[in-house]
Image (cartoon, rainbow over all chains, first blue to last red; front, side, top):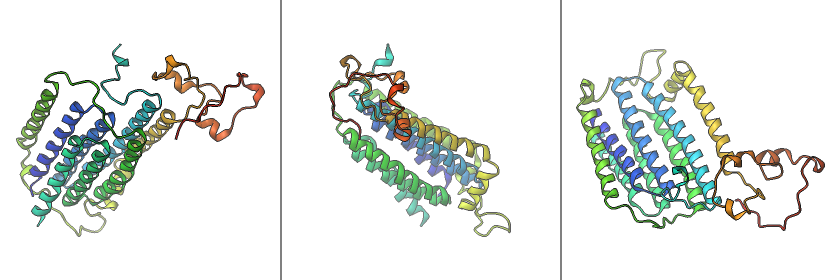
Length: 99
Length: 228
């Protein structure tokens, strides 16, 4: 299979994730959609790594996985704190920062 | 043969991604994401990135998704519809996502890179002496500890910061003064600077300071312990 096929799949998954971030209102599902976007980027990175025949893109993908794990940890911590404080777990209800 | 595997894995990945945003319960969304991640690992294998594929299955589909399942079970999965969407906003979002997809296709496939239409650089399963095979743990480890040493160390620092942040965010705050009804439902920076005796992780590890050093508080009626 040519690299172009992998890139097409990666673009489609990224768009699905972006649409989910815009449409969904549960922060848990929004985090899942963020994972989709990061993984789409990973797929593109690894496809380019294969295209060039070097390992650099794969190292880049591993670092992206580390960043994604950090983002999940902090994001889920915030969601648990929201739940403990009886704040509604819904991004549309969280209007404190709008002033 | 590789074509068949590619289409099976790609359809699995796309179906998993659609499942994440189409299923109602967050719990099923998480399971759908696991399907997506495993299909993506198969795609990585087809691209000869065997170490990243293994890390994807073990770290992502294993550890991170278990974390998600725990939080979904704790917070409760239902997504109650409280406020209706603003008219047309949802359709606009879907259109915008479709525009992003088309734009990315044009950008990625219409690129001037000649190699995009090939199967990639040549793959040599038996490289000359002293070189690791492309994509093996040996090659990745070599790259991480020589060429990419600084990003590698920064990643470990980032993980440490995230772990500390998660503990600060999600620790138990027993008797921390949120009995005041006006404070319920308010998150503030002050939460990170709680006074003594309010159940921080430091006290859990090292114990409370002696009584005479603490401010004496009037005994409160015991309340049910919150937390896990």
